[in-house]
Image (cartoon, rainbow, N blue to C red):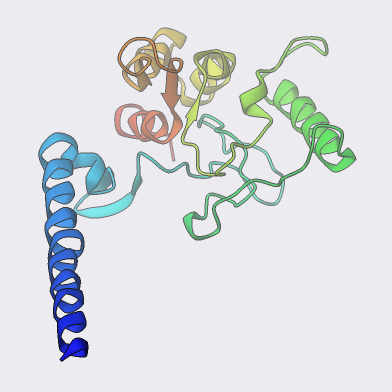
Length: 201
């Protein structure tokens, strides 16, 4: 009798909390996400000719893996310690005094200066030479985009103003007007370049 008295409320609580937290709560949060942030809740997928080619929330590589140089006519995004693999998201965990990190950053700085015809003492924005914590960041700063405008315009055979117009379209303002900074989505920007000003074959 005592066992029955003890088990009955325990079983009832399991049923109630399973229904509440295992069914009702997930359905409610999913419904709210779909109504308020439908595109993001579905992964912000980008399609081309009915085929998903990526997500605007996840960076992609526009780098030649053999040379580490950016593919001509494209903007360079942030480096990725995980090669933009969402299943291996993470950083290198190298500290600022780690020689491997120092060497990697120095090589990238020199490469970016060469790619974009910069002088040996011209500053390179830090986001172009350091990976984000997730390794999946699709954004760069407006300064990093501006640094590459002349090169992309020349390689695409278009004007710098045409490139800047696409940068403006791919730029997001700080959340709620004050949280974070302006950022340029490299994936959306490079896709817009291909859509509007495809490279000559």
